[in-house]
Amino acid sequence: IPTETGSLHVFLLICGLRRVKDPLYLVDVFSDWHRKDPSVHLGIIGPAVDPLFTNEVKEKVKRAPGVHLLQEMPQDDLHAAMKRCFAVVNSSISEGMSAAILEAMDLGIPVLARNIPGNAAIIKHKETGLLFSDPQEFVVLSKSLMNDPIMEREIVTRAKEYVKKHHSWESERKAYQNLVLRL
Image 1 (cartoon, helix red, strand yellow):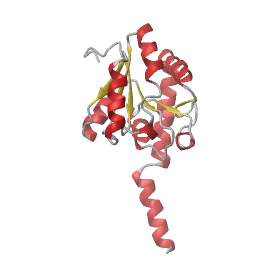
Image 2 (cartoon, rainbow, N blue to C red; image 1 turned 30 degrees about the vertical axis):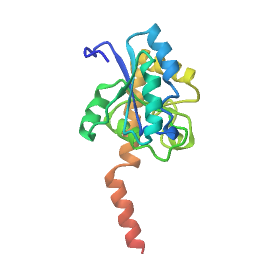
Image 3 (cartoon, rainbow, N blue to C red; image 1 turned 90 degrees about the vertical axis):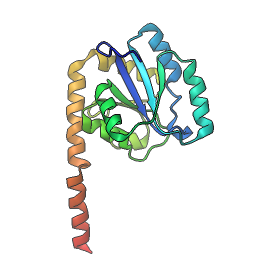
Image 4 (tube, one colour; image 1 turned 90 degrees about the horizontal axis):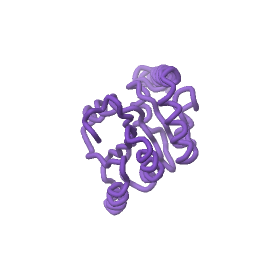
């Protein structure tokens, strides 16, 4: 990824490298998009959970212009990278409650996520993030986000409010206190 990031749109896919996270789902369509618009880049970052699959990812990414496999990094560095990216991406086949999505929302980063039950439970489409059902829709939604800074700002604001209201440590603490009091 070029170091002059002013005119770049860097999308970060944060996941452990294993099949259920499906980090290869968007590689072909993203690479095609990058060939037409060299300002867009996809960075895949996360631990090599499945060594065999990690090799598959490395081989695929080597042949995909605009897609980069980044080294796993400490959480503070990851949050700094997230703050500098255009959007955080989730392409999982199955997901519980994605910490990466919630962290991005809390950091004020737009989220584009695959439309699966776990993601749809925390993202309301076009309200707190964008949900895509196939790679082509991912590109369409990404372009609309890039071209509509007002929509981007509104999504980010609502997402941050959602996390504060439903996933803050304060509300979790209160829920635990109430639970203990009822025991």
